[in-house]
Amino acid sequence: MNKKGCPEEYPITLIINGYEVAVFQLTNQDLEDWVYGYLFSEGMIERAEDIQSIKSDEGSGTLSVTLREGFDPEIMFSKKKHYTAGCGRGVTFFSMTDVKTFNKVQSNNTYLLSYILKKRSEFAKNSPLYGETGGMHGACIVHKNGEMTVREDIGRHNAVDKIIGHAIRSKCSPDELILLTTGRVSYEMLSKAAKFGFSVIGSRTAATKQAIQLAKFLNIEVVGYLRGRMAISYTSFGRVINDLEEKNLGVHPK
Image (cartoon, rainbow, N blue to C red; front, side, top):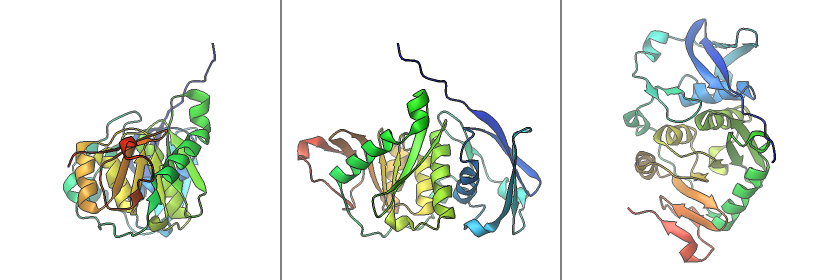
């Protein structure tokens, strides 16, 4: 019998300008990327330069962030909290109504379904923590030149925050990227992707009804169940071209 290690999760306290935001369950890897991605996704920063410094204290399990501009916790945390579903449970301050105010995607870039399926397979092979434990989620961005960057975490939304944080720090243009994820695409996952501006999102599993509704409203292409030569198209804006047999690409009901 093959033995795999157990996935690890750590309670990490996020402190912004001296104010304790919350305790998050995270995989202790690429934490600075997570900070940038989470703060951007939640509207606390708009660009990487908005963060002056990040100090990590492993002994106390804290991440202390100093923002260049003032931070008013009363305004931020007067918003209603929405607790995210799934492992590594987190919290978002964006409601579905808030997300509908995001800019609609206008990208004209197109991709072959066979290409996305190929990259999904490469993504799976380049997820070392999943390979070691079998219990990790991952998020991946496929760059214009075909190169990939992968981030992993116990929580699917944490992994997406990490990859968005990497993209922000690297000055990546969302119009030139595909977002791939191992996890279910729920409304909070869709909101993170929409905030950054991804035009195409692919997952090895399903998308929720609420996520699909938002994706249609914001012009985001969502393709689920990317497995082998099969996929389900949840939205259709002409960015993912089916170059495989029609019977292998399901179309989600309108």
